[in-house]
Length: 254
Image (cartoon, helix red, strand yellow):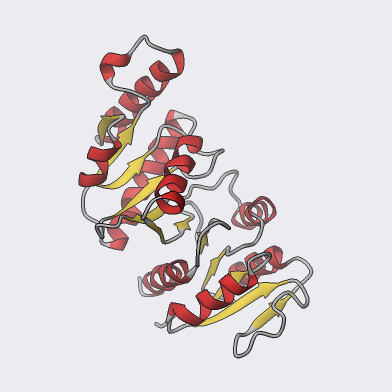
């Protein structure tokens, strides 16, 4: 069953979103959600105007009017809060799909600064990210990162905490603790689990916004709809729209 419609939000960065819609090349219709007058009459692009476009995007996603949603440049705080309420969850678990300049792809989590601070949170995220990696056809194991090597224990309480958490997550899941060696994990893994949401967000920004890696968006893994979170600093959202269409298509054809 084909994907009919994808929604993407616009607040700032109007031209960037318009170009992303025009260049994505998806088969589904793409509707842009914005405040009244927010798109400025862009030609040939369907628009859904609403004083609260984030709420409208989520409402239409859960009402079935659209098959998938991409946050685009909508504010994260208000949009994700509405998404949590609609999904009936207390928190969101996101994994960013990153493509290195070598062409290798992997999922990175957590990427929200408020995510992945507990062992239970990282265990759940690692397992869901592995399922998502399989859906995306990514090969490799799950790598758990910490703030140092095992023989760095005792150098700082926070380092010790990350080492202990990573060892426990690895033991509970059967995944491998790569210590601080992200360069090794990136060669071998389909999923990389950072020590916490702040470090995960910094890794993403370093790779995708300062380095030569490409971000494809961050699917929310613990809800029953396809929602791709994005950074307002991303150069475009064409990859996120393609990812949304692919995941929505797989969901429809289960």
